Image (cartoon, helix red, strand yellow):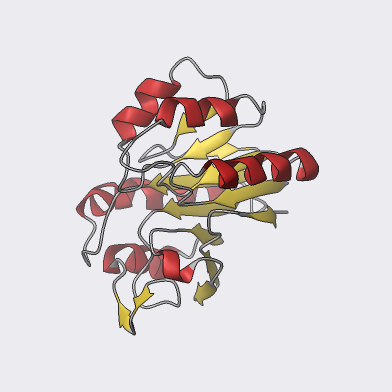
Length: 205
């Protein structure tokens, strides 16, 4: 399965155009956005419609520039756009967990409230079939990785890092800190990736 992952496009029309070209060329099975589609929600509906028009599923979480409510309201008449904020989904053999929002606080209260639900669902997937892969999508990066550094200081979420360390999903897609676009790291066996606004194609088998 081929998945286009991206984050923090902030309504940039040139970046959106390049992503559309990548979709046309690569023909991914799905797209995943780790938040901040816009600048403070401006033009969100029209941006989502462009992605919806590709006919390819887009799974999205809010960043800190839009809300889950805005995404759900603007996409409710769209066939291919779906908010996965606190709504785990199974897409073919990929189990996707999403939690958006967050800023620069160490603890992510909303994530912690859903942590047991996420963990129980992951365990159930693994018991059913070892071929399932698990992917967590967060806007705020996990603490103490190459992806949460600003001026040499780690500013990520300890809540997200703890969950990843304890439950070891296969992948974590994150964003928020533009200085770390394109970087990746590992927490145990979990690959943590900030794909940046131009995105990356992931081949998930």
